[in-house]
Amino acid sequence: MRDHVIAVDVGTASARAGVFDAAGNLLARRECPILLRRPGAERGEHDSEDIWQASCKAVAGALAASGITAGQVASVGFDATCSLVLRAENGSKIALAEEDGIVFDTMSWLDHRASAEAEECTRTSHPALAHCGEVMSPEMQVPKLMWLKRQRPDLWASAGLFFDLADFLTWRATGSPARSLCTLTAKWNYLAHEGKGWKPDFFSAIGLDDLVARGGLPEQGVAVGRPVGVLSPWAAAEMGLDPGIAVAAGMVDAYAGALGVLGPVAADPGDLSRQAALIAGTSSCLVAFAPEPRFGRSIWGPFFEAIFPGQWLVEAGQSATGGLLGHLLLAHAEGGGATTAAHQRVIARIMEMRAEEGARFGERINILPDFHGNRSPFADDRLTGTIAGLTLDASFDGLCRIYWRACVSIALGLRQILETLETSGFRPERLHLTGGHVRNPLLVELYADVTRLEIAVTRGEDAVLLGTAMNAATAAGLFSTLAEAGVAMARPVTVIRPNPATRSLYDRDFARFLAMQRHRAELDAL
Image 1 (spheres, rainbow, N blue to C red):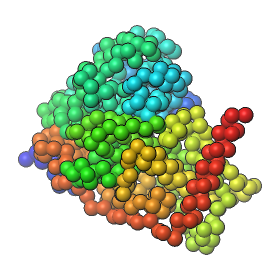
Image 2: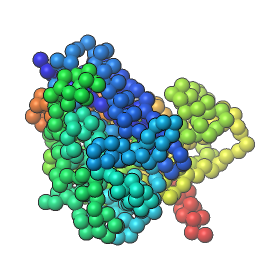
Image 3: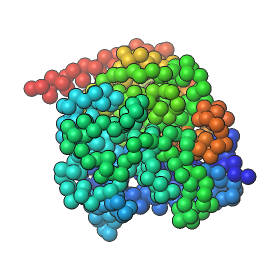
Image 4: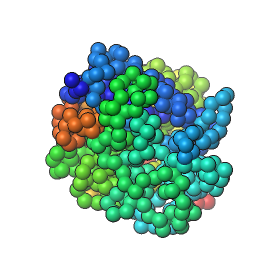
C-alpha cells in the first residue's frame, strides 16, 4: 500500500531527504553536501546537477534506511532555497562560471550581485512592489535576471528556462516545466490574486519585456498540495523509486517550515492568525498569515495562497543569523572554524561563564547583526554590521563574549521585526521555531525572553522536511487538504515561556540596539 512519502529539503550547504508515514513519523533521514562557490563576498553559485545528484543520493539513502520499499511510497515533495537556475531551451546548463571542470549555473539565494538592479526596480514605484515591502531585494529573482541580461547578454540569448530551485527539482523529477504558485508569488513578483499574475508594464519599465517568454514562465502556477506531474522513469531510477508516483508542487524552504509547524492550526483562521513561524538557520524568516491582505514597508508579501487556500502570507527576515555566528567563528583566531563542534564548544563555555558572571557577562559588548544587509525593518542590503565594546582580549573566552552578544543582537532584531509587523496588524501570541536554531539553546532562550512570546519547538523532527512531507501527502491524495494533513501529521511541541526576571535587562539592550542604529545612520550621512 502506498501510504508513505518522501520529502527533500535543499538548503545552502546540503540536500536532506526524509521518509515519512501518514502519521508524520520520520522513519529515516539522510543528508548529502552540495557545492557552493563564493567568488566574492556578494556572490554565491551552485551547480544544479550537483544539487540534483545530492538529492537523489539522499533519497536513496533514506529509503534504504527506512525499512520500507519503493512500492510503499506514494509521492515525493521538494523544498529549496530561492536560488535561480539558468537553463537553455533544450534543458542544458548555462554556465555562469566553470571551475575545476564544474559548471555553475545557479545564483544562490544569498547572491547580492544585483543590488544596483534591485534599487532600480524600487525607483519605479510600481504597484507590484507593494507586495514586496515597497523595496526590491537583490535576493529576488527579477533583479538577478536584470543583471544577467545586462552583464551577460550572451547567456541571456541562449536561455530558455529560468527556474526557482524548487521548480528546477520538480522539473528534473517529472520533465514538467510547471512552476509552483509558492515560488512565483514569493520571489518573482507574480500577483496570484489578479487574473493575470505577470505585470508586463513593470517588466517593460526595467528592460525585461521578454522575461516571460525567455524564461519559459507559465501564466498560472500550481498550488501547494497539488501535483505538478509524476516521477519520470529516469528520475525514478536515480532515486531508487517507482516511476509514476506524484511529485508535489515545489516550496520555498522557509514556507515548508511554516507549513510544518502551522499546518496543525490552519483549519482555524483565527488560531492561525495568532501564531507565526520562525524558520531560522543561516538566515531567518518570520512567516505569518491573515485572511485579508496587510501591507508594510520591508515586509515581503502579502502573497495570496502561497501556501494555504484563501490566506495571505507575509514574511519578514534577517539575512544573517546562523551565518553571522558561523562568520564569527571563522574570523576569530580561537574559533576553530564554523563547524557544529565549534559552535557546541562555544555554547558550552558560554553556559559556564553566564552561571559565574550572571547579567554582567559580555554586557559592554553591543552588536548590530546586519553583516549581510538588512531585510527587515530597513530593507537595505547595503547596511553593515557593528561590534562596539571590544578590547584587546583575543582569548577563547573573549570570543565567547562576542558570540553571546551576537546571539542577543539576533533576538533584538527579531523583536524589532515583530514591532514592525504589529503596525501592519500582526500580533502573534506564539512563535513556532524550526530550523538549525532549535539546536542552539542560547537562541531558543533569548527568543522567548527578548520577544516576551511563547516559543514552541517541534520535538525530535525537522519541521521543514515535515512541511514538505505534508505537501507531498496531500498531492498524493492521502489527505484532502493541507490542513487535514497538518492535523494528521503534527508532531508534539515543547513550549518555552519568557522569564519575566530578564525583562529590564533586555529592554536596556533594546534601547542600546536602537541607539546604535541611529548612530550608524548618522555616520552614514556624514
